[in-house]
Image (cartoon, rainbow, N blue to C red):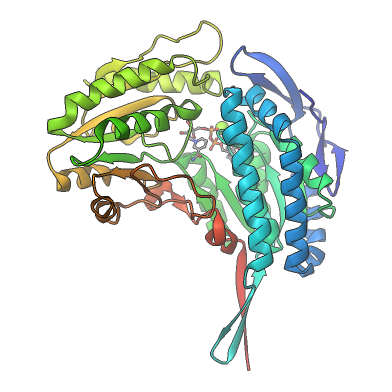
Length: 462
Ligand code: NAP
Ligand code: MG
């Protein structure tokens, strides 16, 4: 894989301040696929200065011109989609088809949506005798994870640029190559120097320096709750704006009137895709007691079919972490009906698609985010019980409801404490606001709600 040995700052690839590097491994065969510089606080400072210097001109650029840049950026991503897919496959290990259909295609859709929104959004409103101007928040520090590496970058950078903000990005250490490819695409799209800057590096070094930098106006973070809590606290102390997209433990609620086989099969596919490394995955399946055994059998059969085709998890640490949750599930008395500790391959960070039955709401595997291909099936007595179980975690990111009648599913969905619900297998929508209730986060990404995160208001009275 092609890798730059510098940082993309102020419109060019520049030498890193230090000499440390990060090795990028392919999780399928544990081979090194590239090396990138490990940024320091000095690199971050350099990048933030560039972003600050570029801010006035970019903020003053007419939205239609910002939209035009985003539209070209989308076209560059389209032209390079095969390369994007291959890069994500090399550093994340996801099957190439999935990389093409999801890791490359979704960011293209999101970039396209912000090209349109930037051109059509009302950056000025009337309110009585006032004119309200929606102005860019300023310099954005974006910190992203590895699970949907390009999507999470574009979901922050595209709306930030549409709003007139400038950006410094610190991508995940495990997936920096697609971030470098993105920086090349931004350059190719003719985005002015300093508007977008990239510093690769480690979270506690480069990430923390970015989150703490006094000249960053907004920190937008996606990742673990532990790091999110720390970033939120740092931002709070500095009275700085912050957006946090954290974990989830979403419920897939199958009401008795639903098409059980469809709901179970789609539910299993949802959890296994991307090897379970999806924050919005429906990792808890809730089934009525009368249909429980049938659902368990269907889920075990469906999971067993995946084998190693889902790809590995991202790294050895994640593999060990997922396995420790499987251990805990068994130790706490859940019934293992598919998968388990045995890896489907000797080499690479593979975890067997795993299904637990007889999971009770208080078990660790029913409460904590595992971030691997592990499904827990819980039994409910009636609708009120299902609702209590579904809402009974600290998270509230996503979910699904299945029922024979759409209105019945909607009525249940309205009572869920969660930011997104798919009704009877509803399709992904790049315009739908994405983000969490409760400890799943602060703020929203995607669509107009995602754009408004990067705007602040100024009222002029006449
Ligand atoms: P993480 O550490 O929270 O990583 C997210 C991003 O934050 C990465 O760019 C990371 O850099 C950076 N970071 C780490 N420590 C930081 C700090 N002190 N200050 C500023 N930035 C920092 O997550 P992870 O270790 O990759 O994964 C651990 C668990 O988090 C997973 O098992 C999963 O449960 C959860 N997770 C959730 C999501 C989500 O979409 N909600 C995504 C990924 C992970 P490095 O890459 O160098 O660590
Ligand atoms: Mg980490």
